[in-house]
Length: 113
Length: 114
Image 1 (cartoon, each protein chain N blue to C red):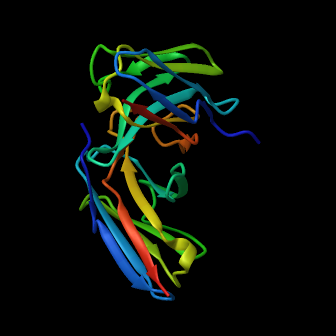
Image 2: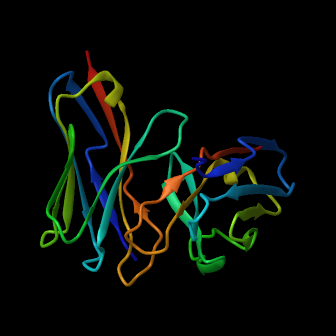
């Protein structure tokens, strides 16, 4: 099955600075890599995703990069704001057409005012 | 548009009791997923359905857990008998079929087994 490793487990940055969260995956056949944001007591919300046919995708202050050769992908948040404070999860499905996601353990992002 | 709807939002019950969690996927979605979230184990896939058919139940912890999807707009996750270690937040998610389709989560059921 798929194995997803996520680092760091906690990340504290000054408001306005950038944050980067990294994930590695094990199944080279995986072709879809979503990122979820979860605020305390709330549901995971999809914030951005990338498919294996592109290396980078950007949506305003959020971007995701993918390196299929190295089997890792990263979330980049620029100009961080207090509302970015949350737990962020990366995920990947196993290859071979299976649909269920394997999640990383999460990164608690803290934005310091 | 209505998202994934789960009920109940909270459930507190004594060990040994039967627990039934319910989920209504987004209309038009044909894949449905049950996940469990705990501090120790994070977010884990329990089971998923494509077109109402269970595809992968390898994440179901043991025989005390069962899931059904009798039609395209309803699914249940049942625990019988429940145990304290089943305490967790249970999320349902839905998507269009396919391994690269975005999954959208419901608000979850926070389950406490005393």
